[in-house]
Image 1 (spheres, one colour):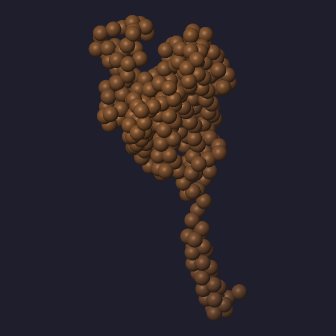
Image 2: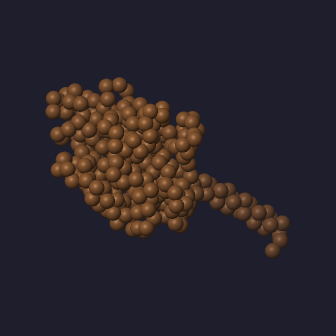
Length: 309
């Protein structure tokens, strides 16, 4: 892909260390591209990574995640977006693991990560850990990702309720993250309904985004303290993207802000401009023009030979 200075999607982002005084171990990135010199189809990549490991190690892990995945997408041609996202996440996991083993200070570090890649108006996502991606459409909010946590599995097996999960002592225990000893198991489900099975959710990859669809990426520093309905309410009542994100951060901080808070907002414009038309193949048109010229000369010569005016 070719890096672009302009995005066809309206973008905004915010990060805040929270109110606990801890170091901000979150990282995020937003990158805009066109697919190639011959194909001006636009693309936008959004990433949120939440580092774990304590001290400065979490910050290192999340930075590796963002850099490696961004590079993987930049080096791809856009033909296999989901494969490129998964490959980038797996490469990041291996790099984080290698860095963790090379230094006592980095031992045990890792990172959650969510990525959203929009090519033209098609959405592709991957996730690992308990950071989330939401879709806001038609005054409704839908969580597209599934948390890889102890409480999520407990909810799915009927051990605890969703209400109990909010204050459960094991709510921050995650089962998947980048940098784990085992190969990273990246989730490629894009869940549009709680009734879907895994295969149905995977088949949603590449879904068409509509004008005014809002894709929101965030870490658990937000979702621990602000409910899905509250997120929806603020986004609906605050047209300005940056202002809406600031209100979400402020609300989380008012309620304690016990963790870092990072949000990336990708908003499809109300009216979509069509990409520039591809220029015709110049050499082909020159060849065609040459043939037509030869035919015209022959016709004129024939008419003169016949003595016609």
